[in-house]
Image (tube, rainbow, N blue to C red; front, side, top):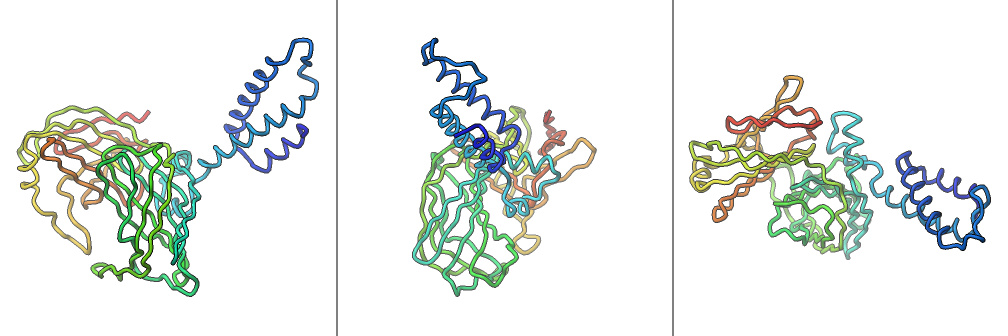
Length: 347
């Protein structure tokens, strides 16, 4: 195989400039290693053609590097619509962290395609396609799996599903985003993904009913690049008059996570009371967070979206705040929580 053949292959695979630089360094390193193993009298000058075996080795490096790059290349269009990045730079940033799984699991009554995974320190999004048998029409207002989960090293997880508009309401396919909230990051872990019984429902408050009973299971590598930036805080504050310590804040485009400690978690939860419903499946957030941006604007989590986990025995409280669309985390100046303002450095 000649150098021209490899150039044609590179053009067909269309790596980025950064990918090409990584490839070049790896090929040079491999070439240096191979050359070092050849007796000095048998070595040739760099201007002469490399031996076929060395070009084959170089090609193997190229293919491995390009396959690796392809796993992180580009954000799926469905994810772009779901996340709605604020600008091109954020779209690129999210794309660089997304991992393309491209796995299919076929059951007796349908096929699940796991397309892409993104995530941060506490939230993982898994993009799924589901195809029912031909002739089945999937046009309900809401869909979910009765059970969905990952077998990770986390002792707790909160799972939800959101139906995406794929523009084809009368066919046998749907797209879903599966959200998995955990106490710590699951990035890099190999997990067992299990989905059981596809359910459908009319608009809220309609009841979910199983329409396709089946089970889909597969091993899944969560090789996404974590988006979060963690900020240690360790500042005292009061929640509804009770003392607590805000230990840390983690910020990413897809969520904000707060970790607190208090000897009064039971009292704090009782003071917060039951969440007040203000609309169809909409509840006021009893623990609102305000995001202040560098341009002077701000937004507050008026409605509850995410997770509130209180572990009374451990004196720990975890709050994960999610949003209808991604936030411009690179422009955050500070986070305000119960009167305490935490500066955020995003340089």
